[in-house]
Length: 180
Image 1 (tube, rainbow, N blue to C red):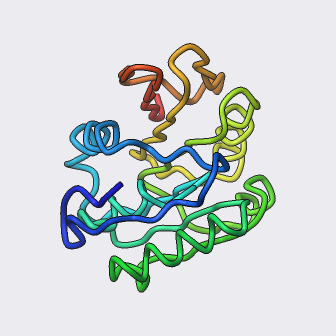
Image 2 (tube, rainbow, N blue to C red):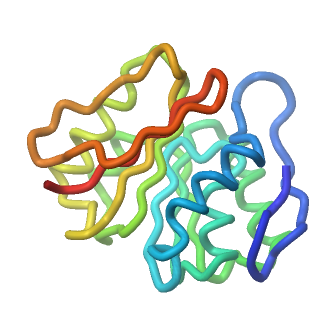
């Protein structure tokens, strides 16, 4: 796993040992950022279920001005912080360790890009999207990017959102939602 483009291009990212996280592959990450390229410069980013922080770090490397990372697992949150230091991007970032529902309720920022890559088959996508809408965390022209299992596809049911793009890469699906 590495940073694909931007100021931290080529830097390797560490991941926790074992199966506690499922990092986004470089192939999927590159495809996501090709879709989002015009929206990244100057954006505020929220990376929920951050794992290694790879998605938020990629956004920072490509010109996002701020990124907040939410990760419940203490070891993974520490690795996100270490990856930010290793890439030189920590001044633009904050890692929040704890339960996503608790932390989403305390955020004050509005985000242009919100990445959701939760553990599969646990209903976290629906809960997270509902809270993002409830607390007004998505900016007017913002995008929620959901990475999920291609056979699972937890689809948000929020009336305010519309699916604008869906891509499948093997057993991974990436869904892009915006306000109607």
